[in-house]
Amino acid sequence: MTAKVENIAEQVKALPEDEREEFLSWLAEFELQHSDDWDNEIARDSQPGRRLDHVLQRVRRDIAEGKTKPLDARAALRLGQRSDAPGLDFPSVSGYPVA
Image 1 (cartoon, helix red, strand yellow):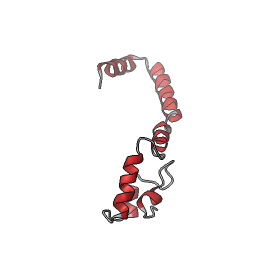
Image 2 (cartoon, rainbow, N blue to C red):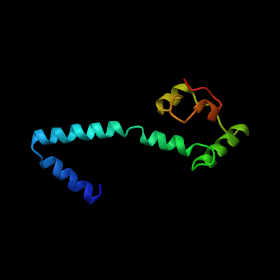
Image 3 (tube, one colour):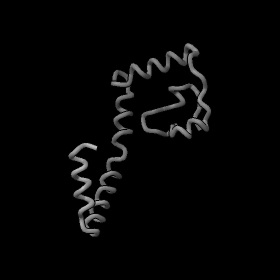
Image 4 (cartoon, rainbow, N blue to C red):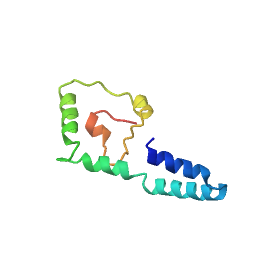
């Protein structure tokens, strides 16, 4: 933790219980409102010509050249991969359906 974050944490700990509960409610709401930000950034960066394009090209090339193995659907679920993740079409990237 950075010194700034440690300072904030100490201030939160020092709050009276009712104010701490109010702050934690605000923080939970803030997190909920921003929970899709990272997924949306990955989706944007995965578009052709964007930051992750070269990675996806390499993955597709490796698949076409037979350098990969199928990912078991159960393993995909354990890894948290979902076929409905925004902007990330796992079946089209890997060539293997993910349940």
